[in-house]
Amino acid sequence: MACQPRGHLTALQIGSKDVAHIEEERAPVTVASINLENASTLEAGRQFPPDFLWGSATSSYQIEGAAEIDGRGESIWDRFCDVPGAIKDGSNGDVACDHYHRYPEDIALMRRLNLNAYRFSIAWPRILPNGTGQVNQLGLDFYDRLVDALLAAGIQPFPTLYHWDLPQVLEDKGGWPARATAEAFADYAEIVVARLGDRVTDWMTLNEPFVSAYLGHLTGEHAPGRRSLPDCLAASHHLLVGHALAMERVRAAAPGAKVGIVLNFTPVTPIGRSPAARDRQQLVDELNNHWYVDPIGGRGYPQYTVDRLAWARQEVRSGDMDLIARPIDTLGINFYTRQMVGALEGEREDRGAATAMDWEIHPSALGDLLRGLHDRHRFPRYLITENGAAMPDNVRVDGRVIDTDRLEYIAAHLGQVHQAMEDGVPIEGYFAWSLLDNFEWAYGYGPKFGLVAVDMETQHRTPKQSALWYAEVARTGEIRPAS
Ligand code: FCB
Image 1: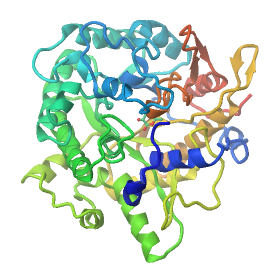
Image 2: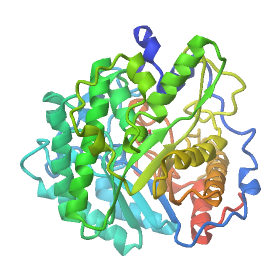
Image 3: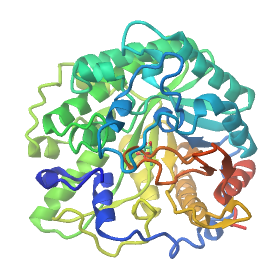
């Protein structure tokens, strides 16, 4: 199986996915059913503003397929999926949901679900098969068609420029631990925005740099599969530099566009107050929840962790921290779960129900996170760019997927978003992860996060109960009880 717990990394093995995965191997999965049964009833009647963005989110490698079509170059995920044991079910994104060919059908689905926004990512290896240099017009043409079709359907496009599929040639030249990758990213961003910026007004640079740096370079669970703390730290800095450089290029190429970054947050609930527990709590919290947002908010890297990891900051050039702190227009927030942290790896107490990923369901952590972020940073605008749940989806009635558990998960989190808005946090939209069941990275096609089921044999799409419910929420702007 992929992602074995690795003893030699224990001291630093602290990403939420990491912990979740280790536990999954030890314990049977518990599925949400207990404390969330009534969320949609409890939160019913909360009314969102008429211009609220109701969306769904996907990413290129997870849904597009067409790996070798129209001149697409190799990405680090193509290469990583070939490593024996890297992907739990031995699968890859070669075909995925075949969205590259089926995007008209998928847009029709979004329309049927009353969605007015769509977050997707652009595959760098489609645009620049060699990472830099020669532009592949056919790759740009695809996103051009996609954007036009979205706009024609009344759906606002929210592209993310990088959702983990680095061109393999750039990895071969050093990848994110090398500064040149940040510069190449800015050039790539400019090329994309030059083509789409006349129609796309909202841009995100990176998706979850924490996951790129940490799972890709320290634990090795994600592409490119490195296991080196110096590489992880260098990658983290260059990802932020890349974000900042790209943001400038986007602004130059599309004046008036809004630009931001998507970060993941996994709030920490402390267990125990021993010195060892406090040390891990601060380390885990800073790495997961502050390492990226604090520099962007002008507060620099969290000092405790810088010292604790003995990072000499040799990659940080003069001027970098000011560059990284240039104001963003939008902070995208990805939220799934909280994590309990004590002195020992994987420690837990009083844990609530969990999803099929074994991620605990704890909606109030989202509300607290949103208020806390806004109190600390006062960013002008927030979007919930991912929130959702993998569920077993094993209840079918007349061919329909009855996923009340996912519906209640979303209702509970929407309730938190609405409350945070009432408390003054300027949140303008919510994107459910995900539109479609898709390729869930190292887990392959096992976990099902979609509002819409995809039969991987036939590519047939079936909106689940949660999708039909969400469509009503999007249509009315109001949280409704499950029917
Ligand atoms: C996030 C990723 C997304 C998906 C969800 C479940 O970390 O951004 O691609 O894997 O988790």
